[in-house]
Length: 361
Length: 127
Image (cartoon, rainbow over all chains, first blue to last red; front, side, top):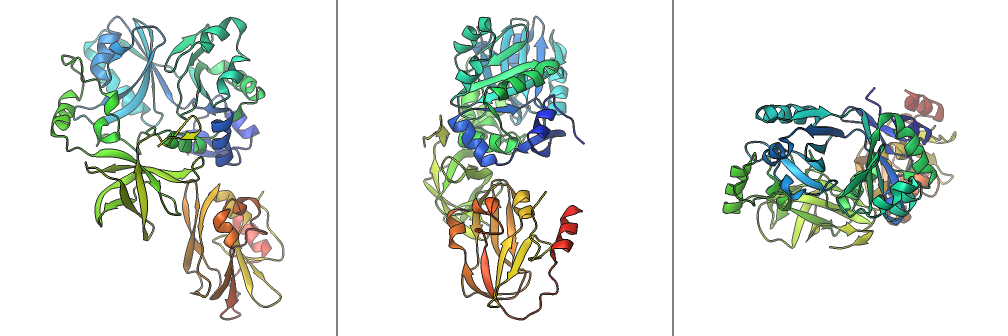
């Protein structure tokens, strides 16, 4: 028996196939993960993401601390509600976790980190915070819902309190707003428009039921994975971990080397990697044959192995198999992947595969 | 509850076997198997004419989340494969005992004693 989110009852009522996910009982799907995938692309769905860890960083040195802790620069956050995606690195430049950080006010920033890395992250953050005047508070009193899909904004807005609708409707991507009970951000992990909502555990079930009643259907972790893969978004533990830097995980864009005088954990090894330019790279692959690409399958050029698949699955939108692969630096157009006992041809493409429901590679 | 058809034979690897009037057998996967796999998106079947040995891996069933070997429950020669399944693997989720049969075999011998009946299979998957 794992930990249960406040939405557990909804999963059971909707006949979810439950799985263990980092110690949490989470829904894999409610019947068909492919239908759920299409539901999000063409309409709207709600995901229970309450297993994710919310950490508040509070204190007068919150900004200063986070500029040291994270590879992206929190100085990019100047207006309250603005969000930033960043990696948190170890001293060697390896990725400890990826996270989203929200600027609440000058003495309060909010991090959302992965469920699987919760204990490691908390210990690391607390250790690094010792020389700063900040307090680190894990918010296990809060739940989190993602409402995603092309029709999600319209459908969600209709059920929000009248005096809150306008500020949510005006949200730009990677911005958040809040009232006394709901924190709503225009962020997500699907490549569709939509919101992530942080709210107290006690009101999460009622709100989820209200959202489902607005014809926003429950979507499981299975579809969440194929949606994020199509959207070109990394999964911690598969596409990146402590052995690889953000540069080797397709996340160079999230590392703020400027200003050059900002000291952040992992900066020096990353600068060395960048200078030598020989680090591994991450690319998108589309299988040109029948079959399914899977994590850890070896990738070849001219019969020589140059890397492996980090995330592979079936793309319901493209109706073929897609994957991310980590490879030796180089220019590639066509590769082969060893799928079971066959070498199958895959085309190299620029990520993402799908944006707003359409192929875009 | 997974559906089980009374007059079929079954295996512990979740295939079903139907003995046809002409002595051939038709093979598919059970409702329980498709439920375990989830949405099936790719199927590789043996070629017509291939000689199969009992319990040999003769193909693959891949769902969004995993790949599972396909075993033959009987020995013999493949006489037909269901071409429809290659185009519409989702039929395996919708109609595993009907439209989504997988392949037919001309038996090499009449040794089917290793197969389970419906009651034994029901007990197996209830465990």
